[in-house]
Length: 77
Image (tube, rainbow, N blue to C red; front, side, top):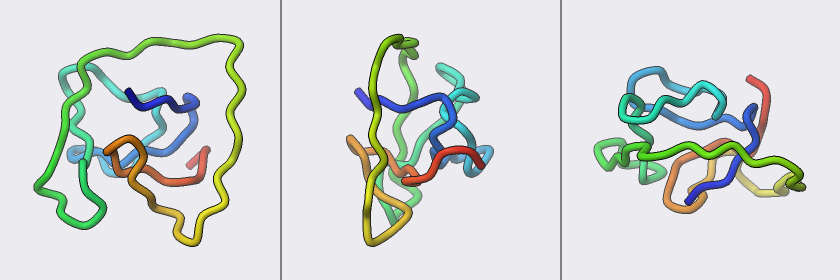
């Protein structure tokens, strides 16, 4: 599972870069590789978490592979 805040940015095949809160089960496809955009995965479930703490990433690159999904280290597009 990939755990994100609702405003965390995710790369989708159909809509490009969108906030995680806009993702749709069974519709959006996510990139499963940093550079090979033919490798995708589907969203099977979205669970809303409450009372969770998230910390920012300090990375050399702003685009990373997190739990096998291509995402940005930034939130709020």
